[in-house]
Image 1 (cartoon, rainbow, N blue to C red):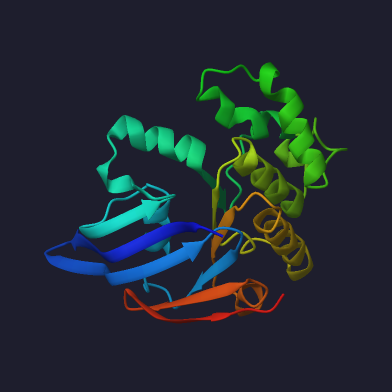
Image 2: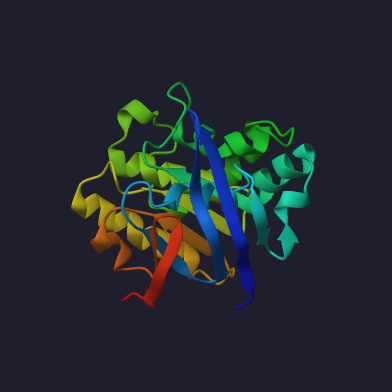
Length: 231
């Protein structure tokens, strides 16, 4: 498996009031494709900052972040937007589905940013919903779906542009334990599905982290070691 993500001496500082806060403090990290990786640690450890930098939602104060060998800090605003559309799929704790759209329309939404119509993306969206076990719910709106079903729609939406990197921020945090286990199994399947795709998940749940291939522990903006999880 090739290197998918590389952090080299990454520092991220924020101005908060009159103080400078160092959210990341010299992080070096290499992640390979074909893995399901979890990032854990206490609140304020830098987990979300790390995820946002991987996704091009934020820029380092110092150091470099490379995804697929490309330094994303060197990209223009237009290049960053293109990077996020085609290289990254996002899955959030609260699903972020559009309530007036059906499941398949929500999955197809990222295609609109490329100038496509919803109808032209319909077949691909339905195929992805079938893949995540929602073939009978393609025309249901979010209010007609359970939390687990909405998260499966969100995973399908993250996959619609076939990105090599999936970033999941507390994807089981709003779900009961049984439903959460189903989402973790789905994310593991996505990571190990043969496309050399990397799935990175931020979680506070140690049992969720335990099913991943590798766990990255963060504390005070630094990496606090890593270990292999169990399958």
